[in-house]
Amino acid sequence: MKTNIGIKDANLKTVAGQLAKLLADEYLLLTKTYNAHWNVEGPDFHAAHLYFEGLYSEMQEIIDSVAERIRSLGHYAPATMTEFLELTQLSEKRKNENTSIGYVKDLLGDHESLIVTLRGNIESFAKANDLGTSDFATGLMEKHEKMAWMLRAHLS
Image (cartoon, rainbow, N blue to C red; front, side, top):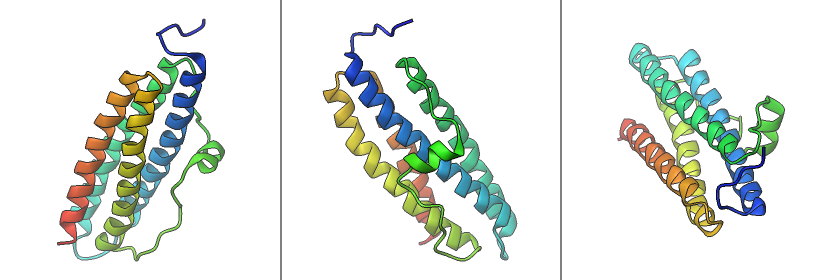
């Protein structure tokens, strides 16, 4: 059935496309967070292992909410690794060692990249007459800002 929520079909398609890219970024970042959780080494292993577990748990909820937002706009969410890798702006490549600090640096850069993307999307969603998705993106941006702050605090 056609989505009839007061937003033009072209705008729904554009917003859903941007959300699909965001979903791909979130999923790749989740995978990198799992990598940190599974492979971190060093004297602070236990604390870092638990910290990364908390991060990926929070990100799982974000991913589900982004996919459901796409569906609420009448479009299908990408759901394969192939699609995610084609849509993401993030890189799978790691730059640092398998220490907690190395993973924190890698993850922080990706969270900050997502914050910048979300900040740009907020206004474009509003211009597409989708204030709901604009508000949704604002909430996601705030979550990533908090995660980035926590990661940054590890580097002080």
